[in-house]
Image (cartoon, rainbow, N blue to C red; front, side, top):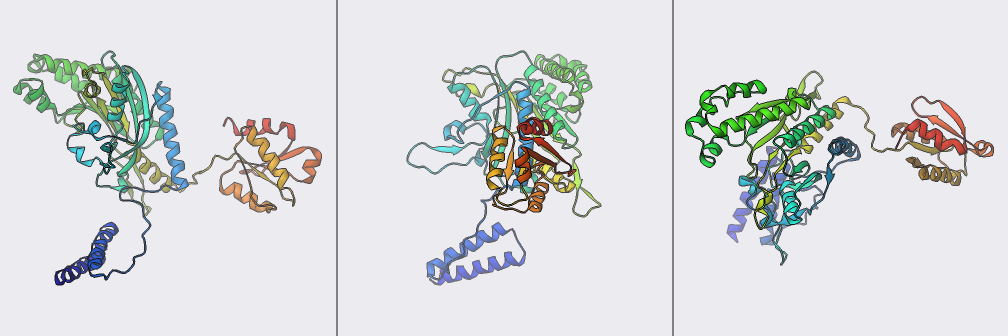
Length: 472
């Protein structure tokens, strides 16, 4: 018991020191829990007030933040659909053996679920491995698909930079046997389109070979002297001119594999030029990504100059500068799940959606503009008493006509309050009725921003509203 008391004393000092240093609240909470556990051994613990918080590495999203997110999602999905992709969904958890051996050192970040007396399961780490499992299980050889869903990683979160333990991934992948570099170039084009449409700042898509020297020498038998020759170029990056420079190296071009790789890279950059994105692409030998399943050219999109106004007012601070998309070719992954080892060539890209959300939210905060959190087009209003039933009838008419409509839930709301509600929520039009309008069979339509009013026959209201709000 004396040992427990001594441990309580020492742990109390730890907690006091952390509070004095204004340490991370999560760290303080963790140490307080240790202290309480020790006190319980003495029967000395007092009931603690339950702390309402989200788990570490997660967050809630308010309506304003969700409006920004939905706008980003809409831009991305429209791009995927413009390129002919269809969508699928897979379970949020997979058999642990499905995920084992696919992520290299990152495997330690996989969330394993507690054994419930049945299958051994883990939360999905990304959307690529489940996609490969889906292809192998359903014997699909050709598909162009996108998938937007949450994934989970036991990473050390950095909330301000968009790194969480629970987060969305937005993946676009092309599976199938196609001619060289055509699908790869389209993946680069898609990343360029999305980042340009979101207007997040200047960016560059870098293409490079993974683990260049070790892979070339140890796995593919490239002569070490040729690999070292390539190493002289590792510090360089560029576009077609860099590839041309490499191809002029006689010693390098004598090696069949090096020559083939450079020809493939030149083909990719040529296709990127045809797709109008060559100015956004840089060829870089020095970078590598850590996932085990990549087999060839890989891509990374990097923001280079994004800045937003800081709270101080004078100084610009970088927000989210760094990688915002990545992907590449993984021709062997599907074969890992197929009983006969049948390969399905795949290439794809994953948009770093949480990083983009952080940037877009920061931009919205800096702009101090109003973000609409609803899509309501018309607010049905009245300035007279006992008009609730008539407002409800008019609201129903608009709903059935496909118009996004709201009304006050009070029986006799003040007209000024209804006008203010429409202004505060950015609702572009009000449909106003009163006894005289009912008698004349008309509805008054008020433009919220200009405050101009027009009167239309009730049977023409839907047509007039549609003309003004456009397609839903």
